[in-house]
Image (cartoon, rainbow, N blue to C red; front, side):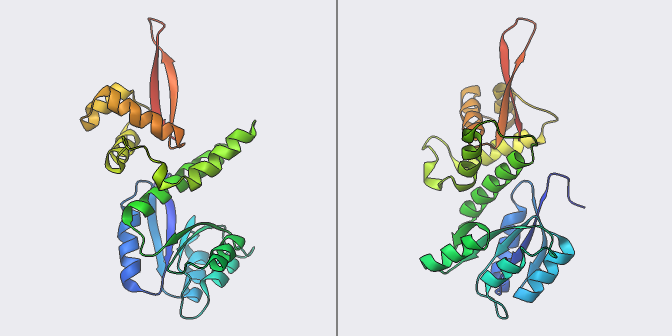
Length: 228
């Protein structure tokens, strides 16, 4: 059984080479687990009903049903609720618009780099975490932050932030029991406290981690971080 934190994924593409590559890429991302692979539209609908994945990675070119039709049917009441991210070679604006109209949260163009897919999945996980936190949103800005965390452009990453170190920070933080300081995390991954703090603050801005002050005996707060 997957861990409670895992986001289950169904991969739908008619090309076995593509599904094998996506399977490997998805399973390398912390907090995600592939539960099914389908090579046709009808197989995708059957797999969705059987496995109830949280997320479907959907190609639009399928041998029996258009991918857009599959996306539409996945939203029917008799199907378990699932989010859809389209991965397609089609670039027409009308196709992208139709995918959005049928509920696609995001649209990736083939060939998709592993790093691009990884960052998209991490943004999706951050969005899910924020939406499952419970309660009501007090301000419009909180809702804006959720949409930004899902659709943040790759080019928005500062030059001082590398994808490899960013993932190392996330992996290390996910492995601690409760939370960690920048100093503790820096020792875990072999970087300075200042570097760890810079990455933690960047990840907090993206909604992937949460930072809270903890007051010690001296009364001075120490910032502690945990994965959202």
